[in-house]
Image (cartoon, rainbow, N blue to C red; front, side):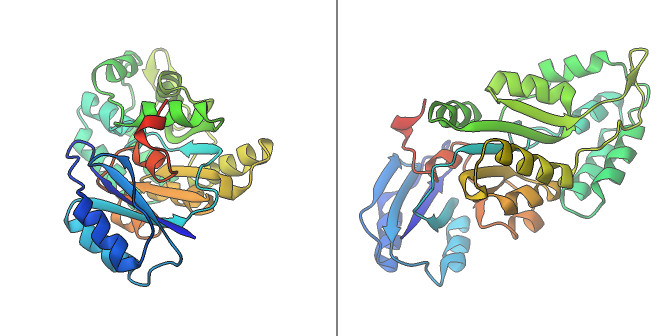
Length: 290
C-alpha cells in the first residue's frame, strides 16, 4: 500500500478538494483524508503510479508539493536535521561574512559548495579565511539580529518528541550557532564545526576535524546504532550537497527547498511547504501537533 500526500504552502493554504479528488480518481486511490484544511491531504493507493514524476512536475507549476511513499512505517523514530537553510532561514557563515564586509564573496562560495560544485572542506577553509580577525562578539550579534527559524520547526520538534522520537541537529556550520538553535527548538543533541577563536577574534583557520558530508553520514550511523534504530525508522532533512549521504540513508530523506542538483537525487522533495510538511508526510494531522 502507498500513500500520496499533497501539500500547499501554509501561507497560501490554497489546496482545494477538486485538485486532490481529481488526482485520487486518476490514480484509483482510496478515501481522501484532510490533514490540514487548504494545506495537506492524503489518500491511499494499491500501487506506485508510473506517471508519478510527471504529475509532480505539473503540481509544482501550480505551487503544490506531492510525496508518494510506502504506507508502512511512515511515522519515524528519529529526526536528523541540517541547520543552515533548513532549521533556520540563513547560512550562518554568510551572515558573519556580511557583517565583515565580504558577504558577496562568501555567499558565492557557499552557493557553489551547497550545489556540489566545490569540495566542502576546501570551500569552508576558503570562506573562513575571509573572516580572519572578525571580533568574536559578532556571533552574538548575528544570532540576535539575523537568525530566524524556518516556519514549522517548533511544531516538528515538539510533535515528534511528544511521540517518542529522538532529534539530532547535524550541521556543517558551527557549534556557536547549533547550540543556540538546538536549545531553542529542543534537539536532543547537536554536532557541528568549531569556530577557531583566539584573543577574542576569529582565527580564520578551520578547527579539525571538519564536519562535512561524511561526518553527517557517520553521525547518522552512530546515533541510529546507539538508539538501536533501523535506517528505515529515521527521517533526515537538508538542502545541500553535503546532506545527500544522510538523506539517501534515511527511510525518509527530505530535500527541503534544496538545490536542484540535490533535490533531483531525493525521493521526497518539499519546495513549497515548510517544516510542518515533514509531519504531514508522516500522517500527522494538524490536530495532532504538540
